[in-house]
Length: 318
Ligand code: ACO
Image (cartoon, rainbow, N blue to C red; front, side, top):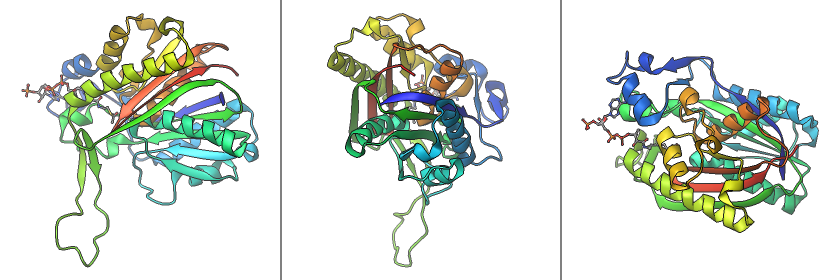
């Protein structure tokens, strides 16, 4: 597969660290030093599905592909106000596609999981084009009284249109079952037969230090795996597009890999952690600025609740 169109969309409302310090016991200094985040786009009166549709339309327009020639839609989403139908089916109707659709939850690694699935679908089903859209609103599942979590996140959607090609050089998906590090549980409707408190409502719980440690370790391992598999030297990669969770995580991976900082682009200061949307949003911003060129080698790496991690190595080509 290869990427022939990118798009993104974010909520209008921008919240900087000083605005957060008016509603929480926190400070710009703490957030900037610990995370690199300065501001983020946060949902107010929007629906996530509208951001997913806007990002998808932008990606389809750039690709020049007729929506009727898109043969599969994958939407990566952790949680939204739609439990069913799948967000991908709503996007399908709004953008004028007529094809099978599926939502997947690969947590913050969902974009790379979706690229890997899409690549397999090109082979197994002979698809012509595939739309991948990542739409996330983590600010709607954090507890806004827990300062250690809610300051980290932002919302948004990023999309790509893929067509046939051999530009996914290597990929690796992993999952190590560990729900203690990041968990979010929603209470569903009660059945008349419940007698115990099994059906709980619990906003995001995260062991930040443990996530930090696991993320740095997993990302380096995954990146080295795909580089070795493809026979590519680390310095030959133009950009390492990492999940935008924390600037210190990105810096730590860069330092451990002994590579220059300019190879590790970052949008975390302006967007915060937008879960699986973070890499496709960054990819779209860079693509529209003309920073991605034919032949560039791009490595992707992401990690999140599960604990899942994933990496991919792409050759950029339009
Ligand atoms: N403002 C001010 N003080 C705070 C805040 C805040 N927003 N949050 C926590 N503190 C305080 C704590 O209460 C603690 O105070 P104490 O020393 O008096 O007890 C102090 O700051 C230090 O807290 P730590 O948790 O030790 O801070 P740490 O340096 O580990 O940074 C952080 C916390 C930013 C969460 C870090 O661990 C991290 O980034 N981890 C990775 C998290 C992550 O990336 N998650 C997402 C990945 S997966 C996904 O995307 C869903």
